[in-house]
Image (cartoon, rainbow, N blue to C red; front, side, top):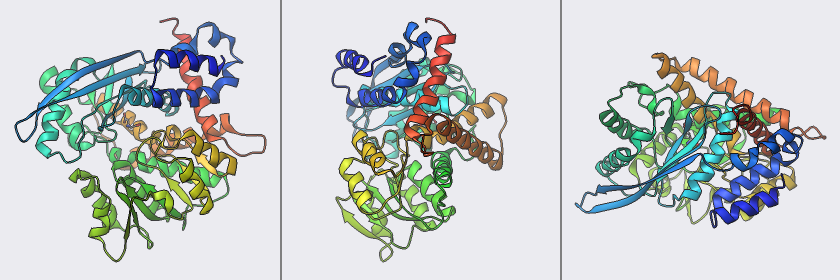
Length: 447
Ligand code: GLU
C-alpha cells in the first residue's frame, strides 16, 4: 500500500470528511511498513476494505420539546467492522455530530476493541441532538424517539450500543426501556452501561477513567517514573473526566485543573472528594459550564474564562473531552511549562501536529485507542455477565480491567519498541489493533 494513494482515493469518495480522513491517515501511516511485509493483505485488498464501514444507517428523529414544539434531528448508526465480533461502540449526542465524526469514531473503535482482547467488532452512532439546556423529560422523549428508529438494527449478538459524549446512565436507561417495549426482547445485553439493578456491570461508569489511569501508571512505570505526587490537568467534567480524576487522586496524584467549554477551573491544592462528586452534578445539570465548580468551591478554586486546561503548569496532561481538543499551540505551551507526559483519554484528543510536537520533544505520549479502551472493555465484560445471566463483584471486574489494560500495554510495547528502548505507543497501538482485524478479515474470505 502507498498511504498517499489510498488517501487520495478516499478523499475523492468522502470529500470534506475531515475527522474520518484524519483518523484513517494516522492509522495507515503507522501500519504502512508492516502491512507491506504481508503480500497476502495486499492481494485481499485488506486496507481498501478496512477503511470503509460495513454499512451506515441514517434516520430522522422527531420529538416534541417542553414548549410543545416539534423538533427534528438526524440519527445514525455506523456498523464499521464485524470481523472480530458483533458491532460494539457508543452513541454520541452532540450538536456537532456528523457522519464524518461517527465514521472516525467507528474506525478507531474497531482497532480499540481489537486491543481489548475481547471478541467485539467496531461501531458508533449518535445524533446532532444537543443535550445542553434540555430538561430530563426532553432527554427522555428524544431517547425514545431515537430508539423507535434504531431498534431493528441492534441486538446482543449483532450490534451493542453504549454511552459516549452526551450519553450516560440516564440516557442508556431511556434507550433500553424503549428497546424492550418495541422489540419485546428482554435480554439484558442489547446496550451496555446499564443501571446496576438491571444488568449493568459494577465499575462500568468508572471504567474508562480508571483504565486510563492504570494505563498511564504503566507508561510511567516503564519509563521509570511514578504517578504519586505528580500534578495532573484534565479537560472535561463528564463521566470519563470524573473517573480519571477519581483514580488519579486515589493513586496519589494531584489534579490541579479541570476545564470546560467556558474556561478552566484551577485547583492549586488538588481536587477533593466533594469536588469529584460535584462533577456528577455538573454533568447531570446539562449546563456544560465549569465555572459552576469555581462558584461552588470559592477559596479553593479559581476560574479563568476562555482558557484551556493546557494553560496550567502540570506534569501530566489528560485530555478527557473531545477530538482535537489539544492542538499544536496547546502542546507547545504544555512543553514550555514542563509537561512530560500526555495520555489521550478522549478519542483522537490531540491533533496530528500536537502529537508530532510531543514526539519531537521526546515526552511520553499514548493514544486514546489504547488509553481509553478500559471503557469498552468493561462493556465487553458487561456483555459476558449478561450472556451468562450473572453479576460479578467489583473486585472481579477491577481485576479483569487491570489485566486487560496490562495486556494492551504489552501489545503496545511489542509493536512499538524503538531501537533506543523507548516506546512509540501510537505505532504500537495502531499496528497491534490493525494486525488483529486484518488477519481476522483475511481468514474470513472476501465478503
Ligand atoms: N464510547 C466509549 C468508547 O469510545 C465506550 C463504548 C462502549 O462501551 O461500547 O470506547
